[in-house]
Picture (spheres, rainbow, N blue to C red):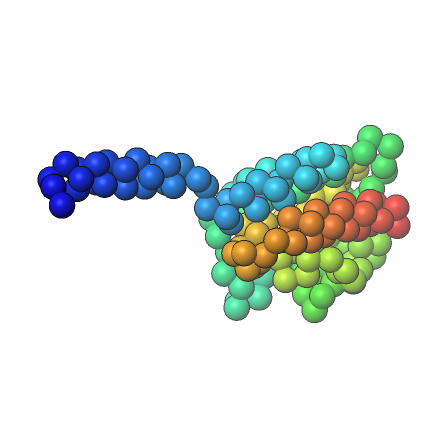
Length: 167
């Protein structure tokens, strides 16, 4: 084998390596699928710093990242009472400044349970704080049906938030 052969092999491997590095990791592709599908439904995904009320009201076994996704559903015809809630025992529990008579207090969580952390309601919007990155990573790497399951569960989240607003 000549030195020319090894040089050509090295160049080909170098080019292939650089092309493979351009492909985003699968968890980032799934996170993009989550956020784009949510946006197509009318949910507004934002990455925000964790609110102080959320960090102080979570159980000690849950670790918070510095940033968290907030998915907001806005409808100008709604007249919702203001409230702030955290997840406790698979239900929304009012935070201290929210009245315990709020209609969402003790409302069961029916979708994406381990990934939802908190919820706020305002006059015309409901926002849910969601570990979307952890949710996207929860699927197996080679799972062919992951995108379909993600879309179905984001559809369910959308319907759930609409249902909460109509209580």
